[in-house]
Structure formats: C-alpha cells, structure tokens
Image 1 (tube, one colour):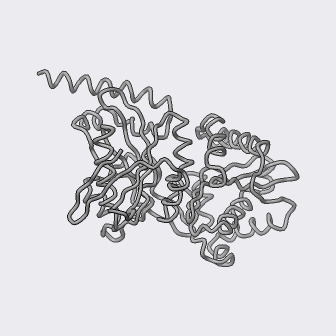
Image 2: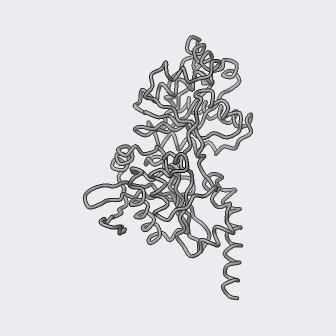
Image 3: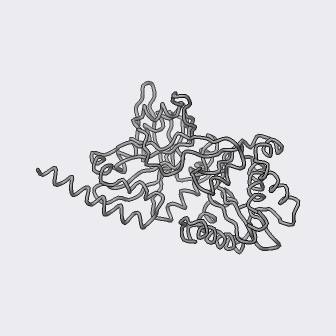
Length: 367
C-alpha cells in the first residue's frame, strides 16, 4: 500500500516494509533506537498491538522510516497510533517523515491520534532542537501524558574505561572494582534455563521494590523475538544468576529495559558490578551510547545516578490529532494513553471511559 505526502519541492512516498533485514538495516543506518527494531514490533504484536513498518522515500532515496504500533480503541475511535522512540530519521528530516507517516496513518487506518516519542535531545536555553521544530511544523504538540520518561541518563560509551569510572561516585567505583576482583562471573545469559533464573529474580525485585511487571510470557517473547538485539548481562555465582541487566540494542544505542538482584546478589553488591559489565559488553558490541532508561524520584533512579553526575533530557511526548473525534478522545479518555504501559487492566478502564466520552459527544451532536 502506498500513500503520498506533498511538501514544497518534494514528493514523498510511503510503503510498508515486510522484510526484517531491510527494516533493521534502515533503523541501524539512521542511528535508530532499538525500540524501532523489527523484533520489538513483533513483541508488541504478540501482546495486543498491531504493527506496521513504513519506509518514507523521496524518489529512489530513503528519507527515513517509522515502526508504528496501533492499539485498538472502541468504535468509532478505531485506534491510537504510537511511535516508540521513533521515527528513525535525521532530526532535520522530521517534518518530511512525520508528515508522510501521519498522512498514511490517517488515510489507511483512521486512527484518532498519532503519538511520537523520538530519541532526540530536547532543545536548550529556550531554543527548539531541529527535531522539535520538525515536530511542530508537522502539526504535533507537546503533551505531558508521557509514555516513556524523557528525563534520563545517557552514558557516552566512546569514553575509555578510566573516563567512565571517573564519572562514578567514589563508593560506586569502589563497589565495581571490588566486584571485578571478587569471585563473581559477569557474562551474557546464554540458555533458556538461565533466562528462567532471571525471571525469578525480576519477580523478587519487583515485589521488594513495589513495582508492577508483565507476565513471564512477555519477557520470554522479548528473548525470542529480539534475540541478539536484546542481551541480558548477568552476575553468576557458580551457575546461579544473582543479578542482571536486560538491554535492547541497535547499532549505536543500548537501552536498558530491566534489571534485578536477589538476596545473594545484594549481599555481594553484584548490582554494581553487573551494571559495569553491561556498559562494557555494549561498548564491545559497538554501541556508542547507553541509556539507563528514565529517572524518577525513587531509589532505583538514585542508584542509576551514582554512575554519572549529569542528566539528559529528551524531547518528550508529542501528539497529532488525526480524527474529528479527537476532542472526545482527549477529554473523555486521558487514561487511554496509559494503555501503552498498563496493559489489559488499563485497556478495560480506557474502553469504559471512551464509550462514555463518545456517548456524550453523540448526545451533544443530537442537541
């Protein structure tokens, strides 16, 4: 299926990509985020989403692409379209690519809105970045209804080990070095049996820290669909996993998905050594940046901030209305945006809210 987007001096085409190697090559060639990789789309498609990969071209030239995730909404809202850390293009091409993708989504899917959370830095000192200018020019507006956290910590993996170590707090550096000299082994998880140990530790960590997690099948699907693009670096005491860091990676970016430590790992402070091992492994794999994935005002974020004194701010969440029903969606269904994070329970709540909102809109129209 092909759609066209007209811009001054440019006639852009959009085509669906059905070849994994072609798609991942596009994402990696444009410094794309691992959440734009084919495997991540397959994970989401196995868990209540639909996925479409769109390549935007200018004649024979590929300008960029976007992996679009669609979450079904009650009739007549149809769906919400979402670009998770997308699109995959240069920030300077943001308007062209987003215009083309939005036109395609509007005409072929009828989604109520398109939400984008690009992997681009926010502007500084009141000035918009190139990507932000492109988002605004394409009709997107910033929203505080975020899905992925924009405040984060990104390490520059082009630094040498001494430079990375020097950025850590003194205590963190000491704990890392103690781990490296101790009896733990740090390496990537290699078998399904080791994966099951990781899942047990993650459940223990979630219970201890008080955060929600998916069912085990979701994590097994990440392991299956992303494969080598989603390594798990673990600390082993003999053949037992005691701490882990789970990552998604593209050619240039490592994105931390999950982490955990059990009681034995806590005693050995293995969460320090395994984090360093994850940095080293991703650097060896060719990644130039390591995103620790979100900073909040909590203990987990405090731990992350021990590894560098700075913070990074990404451009955040932007939303483009695509349907005349958007006002009903935006006023009567704010929780729907959280469906992207919360899963089935939130989806059921969102459906109730949406039906009420649409009902009120219809009553208003009949008056």
